[in-house]
Image (tube, rainbow, N blue to C red; front, side, top):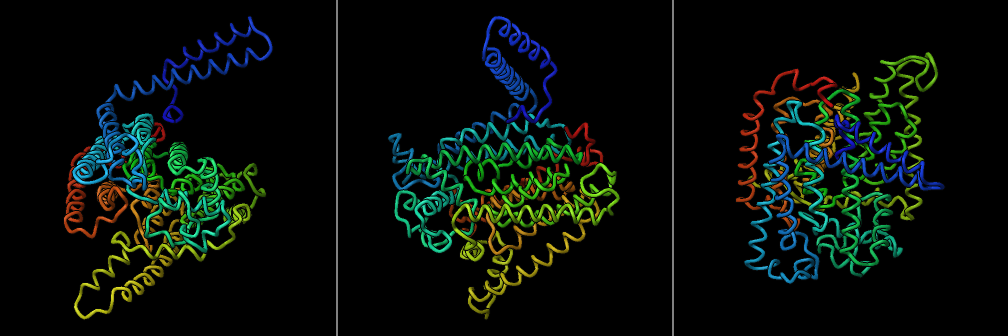
Length: 552
C-alpha cells in the first residue's frame, strides 16, 4: 500500500536496471514461458526492494518514533481486545490461548487498562505526525506506512469497540438461508452467527443496502460456517478497502492541488480509521471508497463510470446519497475550464447544459447499477423502509438526541420519548434544508464542491437521528480535500479524541457516565490546546494551501 502512493526513490533506476538485465539474461537462456515468469519474478523482487527502501526511509526520518509507538499501541490494543472487546460467546482467543481470566474480574480490569493505553499510544502517535502534515512536510509515504503498520497488527483481533461486525455476518447468513433481513432480525435464523449478535439487535432488521447483504453472504459462505473465520475474511476485505481509500484520496488531492500528505494523515492514520474501521470492521469503508472513486472519475470526466461508482455506493449504504449531488458542480467546473470540442459531450454546448447532460448520464447509470444490485441480492427494496430501525439507538452524539435530553432535564416537561420524537423530526427538517443550502452555495468550482461535500457530511453526522463515532470517517476522508482553516482542523482534532472515548471497547455507550463524559471533554480540550500550540508555525496561507509540488 505505501509504495503505490509515493514517487519511486532516486536509486529506483538502478533497481529497474538490475531487474531488466536479469530478465534479459534469463530470456537468452530459456524458452517457452520461462522469460515471462522470470520477468514477473524480477518485478516482484523490484517491488520488494522498493517497499523495503520506502519503509526504511520512513522509519529513519522524523516519523520513525511515532510509527514505532503506534505499532506498540496497536499490538497492545489487539491483545487487550481479547479480554474486553466484542468477545465471542465461547471466549474467543483468550480461551483458546488458555487465558480465560482475561475476560472477567481482575483480568478484565487489566485488559481495560491496556486497551485505553493502546488507544492513548495511537492517538499520541497520530498527533505527533500532525504538525508536519498540515505544514506540508509529511510525505504521503509516511502517512501510508502509519496507516498500514497501525492497522495490520489488528489482523488477528476480535471486533473492537462494537459488535456490529457479528451482526453483518448474521445478516449474510440470513440472506444465504432465504430469510429476509429487511423483515426479520437475526433471531429468525438461529445458528452460530446469530449467537454472536448483541441482544439489542437480535430482533432488528438491517438498515443496510442490498450490496452489503450480498457481500456478507459471500463472506459467510467462504467462512465455512465459522464466525471467527468470517471475521478474519471481513478484516482482510476492510484492510484492502482502507488501502484503496488512501489511493483514491491521494488521487483526488493531486488532481486538485492540495496537501496529499495531510489528507492521508487525517483519513488513514487517524485513530478513527485505525480503531473503528481496521479494528471495528464497520462497513462505512465500502461505500466511502465508491464515493471517492466517483469523485476521481468525475474529475477525469468519465461520467458513466462515475455513475457506476455512485450506484454501488448507494446500494451499500444510503449515506452515499449526500455526496452524489455535488458531482454536478465538479462536472460544471470541468466544462467551464475546458470547453474545447475534445471534451466529453457535444462540442459548443453551454457549460451548464453540458454538465447537466453529463450528470444525467451518471444518474441513469447509477440507477441501473442500483437496480441490478438489488435484483442480484434477491432481497428487494425492503431496506428503504428498514432504514428507520436505526432510530432505536439513543446517544448524545446525535444533536437532536442531545437536545431532547437537555429539554427533558427541565422541570415540567413531557416524557422523554415525546420530546425525542419532536426533536428528531425537527432535526430531519433542518438537515434537509441545510443540505440543500450547502449544495446550492457550493456551485462555484471544484474546490467549493468538495468543501460542500465535507460540510454536508458534517451536517449529516451532527443532525442525523443517529450518530456513531465511525460515521465521522466520512468527514475525515474529505477533510483536507475541503480545505478547512486551522481553527476548524483544531476542532476536528479535539472531536476525534472525544469520539474515541464515546464508546467502550465492547461497543457500549460511555457518555452516560458523568466521569467518562468529563474525561472525554477534558482530553478533547487538552488535545486542542496542544495542537494549536504545536501548529503555530504552520498557520499561514501558503502552508494551508500548498502548491501541487509540495502537495505530492
